[in-house]
Amino acid sequence: MSAVDLKRAVFLDRDGVINVDHGYVSSWDQFEFLPGVPEALWQLQSAGYVLVVVSNQSGIGRGLYSEADLAALNRRIDRYLLDERGVEIAQFYHCPHHPTEALLKWRQPCHCRKPAPGMIEQACAELHIDPSSSLMVGDKVSDMEAGQAAGVGRLFKVVPAATAKPLSGNGDGKEGVVLVEGLADVARIVSESRAPA
Image (tube, rainbow, N blue to C red; front, side):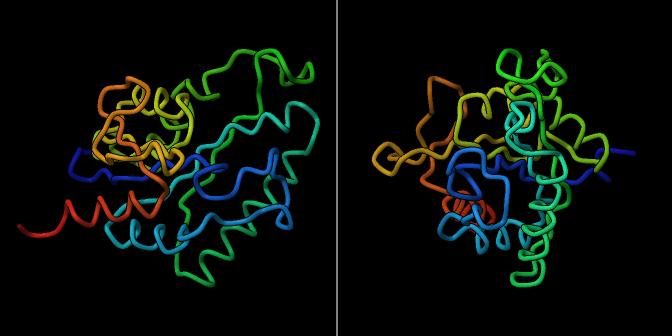
């Protein structure tokens, strides 16, 4: 497949970016979209980006919920976004591992847990994505590090409103990390960068 055929994507951390991070969110009744997120996802999709969720889910490894619980939640999120907003999540990727704080089966160093780039690399291979023309949106340094390690072109870190100014600033000393208040800012920045001068 040539570079011309590759897609561009928005790689999205879940908790703290798409939904309120209540801690180990594992069911639809715990899930709460952050303000403006469904609309922002629709805008990013309309701008030609494939939407991919890449999320550390050590709650599985810790025994707090199961792979089946997470799959059921992902189906509900997907169904809601598609039915109510016309938004399609291309794929949900997750890492159930933790190097120290997990049950034995899941306690291991791995290539999928962010800051490792494994989930992003897997998505690029399976969905034919060009990371250099893609975006990473996360709320932790590990999200930015995973994006950088995978060669993602633009990195956006969601931070509290008081620290998001100026929007063009770098975050945590990471070169090229743009600080934003939420996903709506990312959609706006993408829209503005596509507008004719």
